[in-house]
Amino acid sequence: MALYVKKFGGSSVANAERVFNVANIIVDDYKKGNDVIVVVSAQGDTTDDLIEKAREINPGGASKREMDVLLTAGEQISISLLAMAIEKIGYPVISLLGWQAGFNTDTNHGMARIKNINTERMKSELDKKRIIIVAGFQGINKYDDLTTLGRGGSDTSAVAIAAAMKADRCQIYTDVDGVYTSDPRKVKYAQKLDEITYDEMLELATLGAQVLNNRSVEMAKKHNVELEVLSSLERKPGTIVKEKVKMEKILIRGVAKDTDVSVISVIGLKDNPGIAFKLFNALAQKKIEVDMILQSVGRNGTKDISFSVKRSESENAMKTIDEFKENLEFEDIKCANNVAKISTVGAGMESHPGVAAKMFEALFDNQINIQMISTSEIKISVIIEEKYADKALAVVHDAFFC
Ligand code: ASP
Ligand code: MG
Image (cartoon, rainbow, N blue to C red; front, side, top):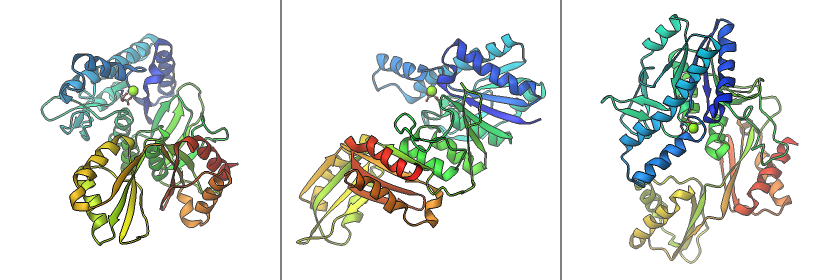
């Protein structure tokens, strides 16, 4: 007998038919004598619809506390419906809201962190041989107020339960059947991976692979919870996410595209010591995260510095630098939004030179110009023009996988 934690996303429980489909998956494992704790998200677009309702009342102005009261309702609906479906099939089940399942969080409404899980209630329900359905994405703070964990937070709820209850497996069911070497909707030859490391998954998640929520992977790594990403629509094995995987001959685990990026160029800065410090310190003070940085060689006592930020941060970054103009002394500042980032990720590249060259060659063969480059132990990223992003994704992918 094993303990399974299973998480089902919003699309997996979007309507009555899908709720019954999920109920059957759960019951199948329960029937084999396993304990099953399930975490569900709100049905379909419920969370977005609720946010829209709040906008109708007070556009952008609602307090975070009341937003949390509103948004937790989405998961309250899905847990009860799923429990009803399991009752109907004829198995013992109980639904629990986040606080009933023991989720204690900090007070940061809208982006709360789990402090601990009091597992007493869940343990006693398992002792009664009940299937437990827990509302994802929510908890309660020290003032007994409802909190939410940030968008996509149900993955984190599931991993947290798996860690706290020492589950044998944490299965994240979605509408794709696993993690791919690239976006299968955009890259024809994308392949499903059997396994991927936490670190690789974290890079791919940040880069917009959108299969697992980042925090959930961080938490899984920290507590060494083995994850499986699999389809709720087809019954077949998915992708396992864990600390170490067989390396085989694979250098690269995936290629990702990120269009949520802008490049800001500060032109004609004085070529003096301390300029880069002043510039990036000003941005850090405003909590603007800088990703890639490029500094030109000096000419006539001046230099240019370009850097990339999230597109949503670009205006803020421009404003911050402008406010600093006197102090920094530069000639001009420009912002390019028509850019995209393409990254190859793989733990194997560390010990194999030549990955970068292969990536750059694929781009060169297709006459795609590279504007910026950055590398880490397991990642190489380039900035290119956005209009070539899908093409770049495919040609770089195919250079490694075809
Ligand atoms: N329902 C929440 C959201 O849409 C939580 C989740 O889906 O994980 O963000
Ligand atoms: Mg959702």
